[in-house]
Image 1: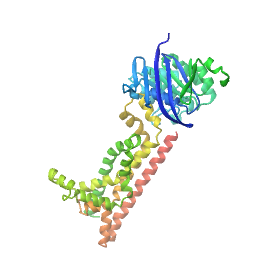
Image 2: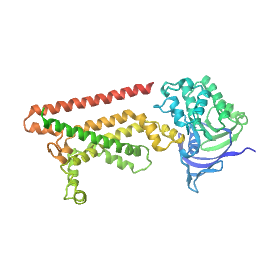
Image 3: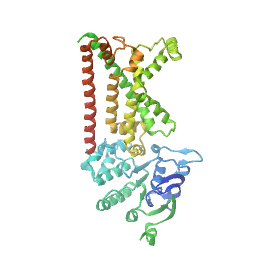
Length: 231
Length: 226
């Protein structure tokens, strides 16, 4: 049986385009798994990632990662984002305009591990772009840098917030392969947020479908997306 | 140009430099708090800081003069326990200048921070970086134009201050007499030539500072584009 790494049950009042909702979810993610939270825009997917990262505080519930409690509303435990070993790829990439590509990776790594930075540069085909700042990179290169930076910290959990939504389909296919390769190489348990059926089917091994703040179905992508509603 | 002329300008520049340095150091934490704090009553602090923008300088100067007077609590307290008298002193006009220029520095920095995507700060936190590291390595380097604007506007505005300084400091040569007050004083004495010298210098200096602000901002916009 697979070991559960993330055990999450939270409630949080959220403001969506459709009005006020209550995000009320319970999810479990196996260690080294690649799990997707699938749903339309504005149903609370990003909030869920932010809760795991410690950037948004839930109203109630708990978050247990391995044998550590990261959040517990009853015991009043709430670890700061800095104390959670995660990598977060933001939808807008959140690259720092003042830093070169290499400076991003050096800023993100915990210790002076030149070899690890070098490995990331090769995996994401970024070696020739070290001295460039984000403004001089293409959309695909920015996305690669965002993922490489998130991995530079050697995170236990990688959180991807619709990272490929602003990229053309050809580059997207290539980047999907790189994300799969990175997942295999760095063994980070990965949680992806997406509303793209083909992307979810290709990348993840388990899907939670979320709507109006609650999980409405869950299972393997093939089982979920073979239902008539998605075809 | 005589010694008094240079002495007056030296006091003006010393006042503007010290005001700018002190406000730069205090303006950053205040602007950070106003931008990112969830504290609801911060709006009161915001309004208090911006009061000098709409208040006649003479009103602020009047209340500070009252506060500094040994006949009232604060002035009496300073006089009795620290042997300090702020009315009609350089330290007094410096304090008045700091309060009067607070919105120019704080509002500039706050505007810079507010225009940055919140995700930059969040990204730095998720990389394990502390608030302090995030501020100095990510936030401040990306709001350089706002910092320059705050610095130059505060400096230029202090040089042009009149009402507050006249109320608190009077017009004591070599002590509290600054260039903007000297213009008024020389005109009162019908010394139009000397008043003109002060005025030309102030005019050119103000123009030069604004030129620097706009040039720096233009260069930064180019830098951001590439």
